[in-house]
Image (tube, rainbow, N blue to C red; front, side, top):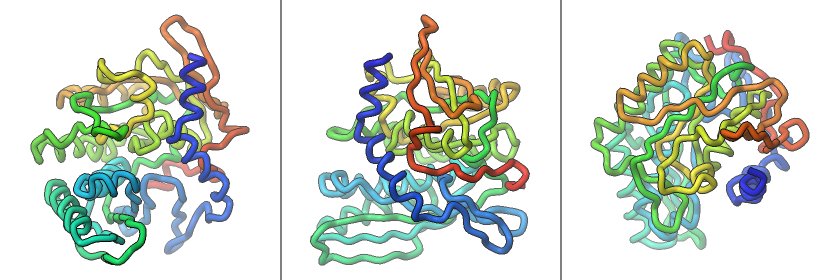
Length: 328
């Protein structure tokens, strides 16, 4: 476990996220819109509007992926944004893109990827900005969504079960730690799997949820706990993964379909059954604690401290907490 811990801590995924903590102090921790607080640090901003929430998010695409496979970069830019909306318990409404490209063919391939996946997820592209004279290409995509009840990263509670949902049927994209478990699915299957998260939010079965992002499972868990000012005891031998993938690689992978839930223990079986019925993996991998320390434990009951958020913030979020009541 000690070797695994040191390897994870020095990984590019966590080092890049850790760098955010140096600039977080220059960002507002909250904003106020029409008298309602909007916290910074969730998968999307959640803005109260009448009897629902407007959800707004944006993603910048990993530059090496954009240069090596612009079509896949376009598809991924939609996937990551759609996942952010669903992880909050909402459904996407529309997306816009901002593309700076260095050549015409790259532009066409990126836009083809965006168009194909936008059609697949039934979310229209309604505008954006394109420049084709850039010295260095870049792609950012922004999304608008809507939710009745939201699943905020700020709401994990001591004693909650941490539950990881994923699809282990897939393969890594060559050259990247990106597990593709969606491209082989039918369009209706992709949306049906995501709709389960909306069901969980609207049935109030979860305290919080988070999309597993480019920080991987372990980085996304740290960000969730940091937002909620909590810790966790993680059972590393209980983490479901494809049998051929080493645990370290899986903990750092972007799984394309991966979500973490923080649940009251009495709701865990109900949530598990929803995903089991779709052939998806859904397992309890740990328990939320109050001490802001994240520790690993294995089947031999050996325990090792992985991260102390009290003394070593990951991205610097979590100075403000938010109760379930503030989300309605």
